[in-house]
Amino acid sequence: MKYPWIDEYLLQKKGVTKDHKLEWNWVRYMVGDKLFCAVCLDEEDKPYYITLKLEPAKGDALRKLYPDILPGYYMNKVHWNSVKPNGEVPDELMREMLNEAYELVLSGLPKKKTAEINNI
Image (cartoon, helix red, strand yellow):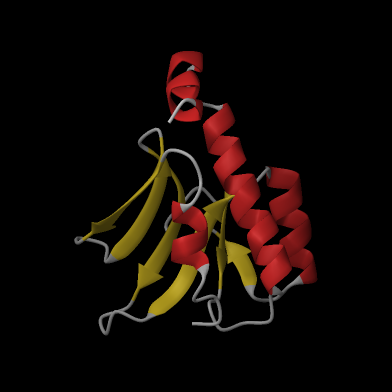
């Protein structure tokens, strides 16, 4: 995978937890128990998509600019986008998208949950 830094990068964010959804073979990253990013693994445990949440307009624009960004795999195609893990999306753009996904989900949490996360 072109982005070996993703796990460490996401786990440094406040309140982020990670699990492995065996039925789907996805490594999921959540904040406040809400998914914001998933690394989708194949039968050999190799990543085939990195799926993350984005504002609909931004996701649509990025899909037009980068052939390696697609509508969300097995997700709502308006709000979720999937990135090919060995494609041509620059690292800086991937970080930007991961940050946006995290912030989108964090900002949608109840105020009490957000306050708990920010005090961790």
